[in-house]
Image (cartoon, rainbow, N blue to C red; front, side, top):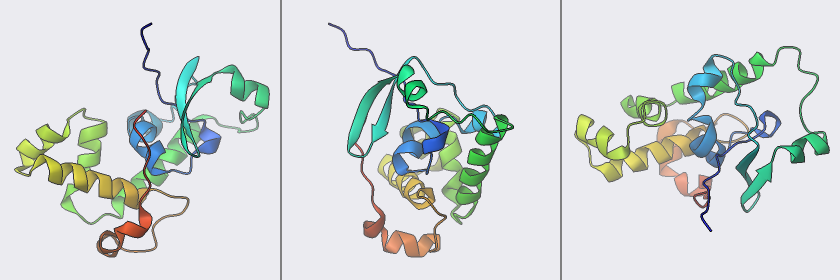
Length: 162
Protein backbone atom coordinates (compact mmCIF):
# COMPACT_ATOMS: atom_id res chain seq x y z
CA UNK A 1 0.00 0.00 0.00
CA UNK A 2 1.36 3.40 -0.98
CA UNK A 3 1.51 6.11 1.70
CA UNK A 4 0.33 9.60 0.85
CA UNK A 5 2.14 12.64 2.21
CA UNK A 6 -0.54 14.72 3.85
CA UNK A 7 -0.24 18.50 4.03
CA UNK A 8 0.54 20.12 7.37
CA UNK A 9 -2.18 22.41 8.77
CA UNK A 10 -2.95 24.09 12.09
CA UNK A 11 -6.23 25.78 13.00
CA UNK A 12 -5.89 29.54 13.54
CA UNK A 13 -7.04 29.25 17.15
CA UNK A 14 -4.08 26.98 17.99
CA UNK A 15 -1.30 29.25 16.68
CA UNK A 16 1.20 30.17 19.41
CA UNK A 17 3.63 30.14 17.22
CA UNK A 18 5.87 27.21 18.14
CA UNK A 19 8.99 26.25 16.21
CA UNK A 20 7.02 23.35 14.72
CA UNK A 21 4.18 25.61 13.56
CA UNK A 22 6.67 28.10 12.12
CA UNK A 23 8.90 25.58 10.37
CA UNK A 24 6.27 23.32 8.84
CA UNK A 25 3.33 25.68 8.27
CA UNK A 26 3.43 29.39 9.08
CA UNK A 27 6.62 30.40 7.30
CA UNK A 28 5.58 28.54 4.15
CA UNK A 29 2.21 30.32 4.24
CA UNK A 30 3.58 33.74 5.28
CA UNK A 31 3.03 35.28 1.84
CA UNK A 32 -0.66 34.32 1.88
CA UNK A 33 -1.06 35.36 5.52
CA UNK A 34 0.28 38.84 4.71
CA UNK A 35 -2.66 39.26 2.33
CA UNK A 36 -5.17 38.01 4.90
CA UNK A 37 -5.58 34.56 3.40
CA UNK A 38 -5.45 31.92 6.15
CA UNK A 39 -5.27 28.46 4.53
CA UNK A 40 -8.53 26.53 4.58
CA UNK A 41 -8.67 23.27 6.44
CA UNK A 42 -7.79 20.38 4.09
CA UNK A 43 -9.96 17.26 4.05
CA UNK A 44 -7.02 15.28 5.49
CA UNK A 45 -3.80 16.64 6.97
CA UNK A 46 -1.09 16.25 9.61
CA UNK A 47 -0.92 18.40 12.70
CA UNK A 48 1.40 18.39 15.70
CA UNK A 49 -0.05 17.70 19.14
CA UNK A 50 1.99 17.67 22.33
CA UNK A 51 4.33 14.76 21.60
CA UNK A 52 3.97 13.95 17.94
CA UNK A 53 2.42 14.25 14.52
CA UNK A 54 -1.08 12.93 14.02
CA UNK A 55 -3.28 12.54 10.97
CA UNK A 56 -6.52 14.50 11.10
CA UNK A 57 -9.70 14.89 9.07
CA UNK A 58 -11.74 18.05 8.59
CA UNK A 59 -14.74 16.85 10.58
CA UNK A 60 -12.76 16.53 13.82
CA UNK A 61 -12.65 20.30 14.42
CA UNK A 62 -16.19 20.89 13.19
CA UNK A 63 -17.61 18.29 15.58
CA UNK A 64 -15.55 19.61 18.48
CA UNK A 65 -16.94 23.09 17.91
CA UNK A 66 -13.45 24.54 17.91
CA UNK A 67 -13.78 26.59 14.73
CA UNK A 68 -13.87 30.31 15.48
CA UNK A 69 -17.30 31.58 14.55
CA UNK A 70 -17.40 35.05 16.08
CA UNK A 71 -14.55 36.78 14.25
CA UNK A 72 -16.04 39.78 12.46
CA UNK A 73 -13.34 39.98 9.77
CA UNK A 74 -11.80 36.56 9.02
CA UNK A 75 -9.07 38.06 6.81
CA UNK A 76 -7.65 39.79 9.90
CA UNK A 77 -6.65 36.42 11.39
CA UNK A 78 -4.04 35.87 8.66
CA UNK A 79 -2.87 39.49 8.68
CA UNK A 80 -2.49 39.52 12.47
CA UNK A 81 -0.48 36.29 12.47
CA UNK A 82 1.77 37.54 9.64
CA UNK A 83 2.29 40.92 11.33
CA UNK A 84 3.37 39.21 14.55
CA UNK A 85 5.81 36.92 12.71
CA UNK A 86 7.20 39.86 10.71
CA UNK A 87 7.65 41.90 13.91
CA UNK A 88 9.54 39.04 15.51
CA UNK A 89 11.76 38.58 12.46
CA UNK A 90 12.52 42.32 12.51
CA UNK A 91 13.93 41.88 16.04
CA UNK A 92 16.80 39.85 14.59
CA UNK A 93 19.70 42.25 13.88
CA UNK A 94 21.57 39.81 11.70
CA UNK A 95 21.92 40.55 7.97
CA UNK A 96 20.87 36.95 7.35
CA UNK A 97 17.28 37.47 8.56
CA UNK A 98 16.05 37.56 4.93
CA UNK A 99 17.17 33.94 4.56
CA UNK A 100 13.87 32.90 6.16
CA UNK A 101 11.91 34.48 3.28
CA UNK A 102 14.33 33.15 0.68
CA UNK A 103 14.05 29.60 2.02
CA UNK A 104 10.36 29.37 2.89
CA UNK A 105 8.77 31.78 0.40
CA UNK A 106 11.38 31.83 -2.35
CA UNK A 107 11.78 28.06 -2.40
CA UNK A 108 15.58 28.15 -2.19
CA UNK A 109 17.14 25.24 -0.38
CA UNK A 110 19.99 25.60 2.10
CA UNK A 111 22.60 24.69 -0.52
CA UNK A 112 21.43 27.41 -2.94
CA UNK A 113 21.46 30.08 -0.23
CA UNK A 114 24.90 28.96 0.93
CA UNK A 115 26.36 29.14 -2.58
CA UNK A 116 24.87 32.57 -3.27
CA UNK A 117 26.13 34.11 -0.01
CA UNK A 118 29.41 32.12 0.15
CA UNK A 119 28.60 30.24 3.34
CA UNK A 120 28.67 26.55 4.15
CA UNK A 121 25.32 24.79 3.87
CA UNK A 122 25.54 23.75 7.54
CA UNK A 123 26.01 27.41 8.58
CA UNK A 124 22.89 28.48 6.68
CA UNK A 125 20.85 25.63 8.12
CA UNK A 126 22.05 26.38 11.66
CA UNK A 127 21.37 30.13 11.37
CA UNK A 128 17.84 29.64 10.00
CA UNK A 129 17.14 27.14 12.79
CA UNK A 130 18.39 29.63 15.40
CA UNK A 131 16.23 32.42 13.96
CA UNK A 132 13.14 30.18 14.02
CA UNK A 133 13.77 29.27 17.66
CA UNK A 134 14.24 32.96 18.49
CA UNK A 135 10.94 34.07 16.94
CA UNK A 136 8.92 31.17 18.36
CA UNK A 137 6.86 31.09 21.52
CA UNK A 138 3.81 32.59 23.15
CA UNK A 139 5.43 35.99 23.73
CA UNK A 140 8.13 37.91 21.92
CA UNK A 141 11.65 37.20 23.07
CA UNK A 142 12.80 39.18 26.09
CA UNK A 143 16.46 38.61 25.29
CA UNK A 144 18.28 40.26 22.44
CA UNK A 145 19.32 37.89 19.66
CA UNK A 146 23.00 37.66 20.60
CA UNK A 147 22.17 36.78 24.24
CA UNK A 148 19.62 34.25 23.04
CA UNK A 149 22.23 32.53 20.86
CA UNK A 150 24.65 32.30 23.81
CA UNK A 151 21.94 30.74 25.99
CA UNK A 152 20.16 28.80 23.23
CA UNK A 153 20.25 25.44 24.98
CA UNK A 154 17.48 26.64 27.30
CA UNK A 155 15.17 27.39 24.37
CA UNK A 156 15.30 24.28 22.21
CA UNK A 157 12.16 22.57 20.91
CA UNK A 158 12.48 19.47 18.79
CA UNK A 159 9.83 17.84 16.67
CA UNK A 160 10.27 14.84 14.41
CA UNK A 161 9.81 15.50 10.71
CA UNK A 162 6.24 14.80 9.56
